[in-house]
Image (tube, rainbow, N blue to C red; front, side):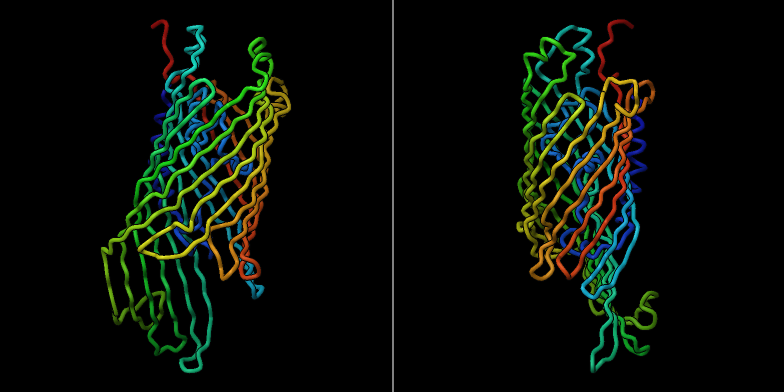
Length: 444
């Protein structure tokens, strides 16, 4: 009964090392800004529906973005997501660059604290439900290596080199309660990670001294977000009389948080070097500071949305998220950012959930999103859009119905003619379900 839970903690330990060891594996100049490239917070299956996370709640899949969704679960769920990304960069000079990267995306476990099967055994329907969830997710990744050749009339040819690496991660614990038609939830989390930035001036003259400035800092702090989902059954009378009729419902959802504080501990190093800069034959340290204490604030966020359901056969949702990155503060790396917005539309369709034909029981997912990012180059704020499609493939694992969620995302991020990034993201999610947790035994 508890094999999924034991497996979760085993994979949690192994997976956390994999998460911490990688920053993304690809070169993205956009990750120079803020705390890096923000990782899509949604589980894989929601990414392939455009990210309609505010009002979406499922009986067998975890939505760790809105904690109010936990109490809609009818079985324990363990979810793991991995991705592979290909990006193509184009700048205003017409230069092109392509690269592949991949990551373990998240680990999530959520479960109802009272098994729904007990209601069947007791022949009693309860209005109150309580559920809990745990997750480990990446928040941001820094990964770039930029070279810029230049010539100065007095000092000759030289190369500017910009290198960044690292990432921020979050572990969180959430609770959700459902009473009649309203569910509310709370996630409490802890964010941590390290970011490293190097700036190098490499002179082509062999006798010249090259300069390297390094700024590293560790970031940590507590976070939270709250959420609520109200469910309205549109055909309640007909569904009550005949449970074989698919319930038609609308979920209205909201989640958000105020600005959250964090602390930093950094190191600054300014060096002169001779010889090969990669070998860093150090001849002089111009300045060195360590244990530089700082603080900062991550921005407030608000997400709202609505989702329409026809049983487990159809879902259509719309979503809007506002993140006030103009409120971002960081003593270790001061920077002005812009407010970010994102609007999404998506859903799924299943031809016949009761069919013996496997293809009729598959989730066919689709989605679209458009938004403005928090970063700007000159007067051009980052524009982002994506088109998504995916499949949810049910399978039986230890006599329980579980799901393989896979799909693809096509999109572009652009700051006008200055820099654009076209990407293809392949996602794979595995959701394992178990309906034996917290079951009340009638006989031993």
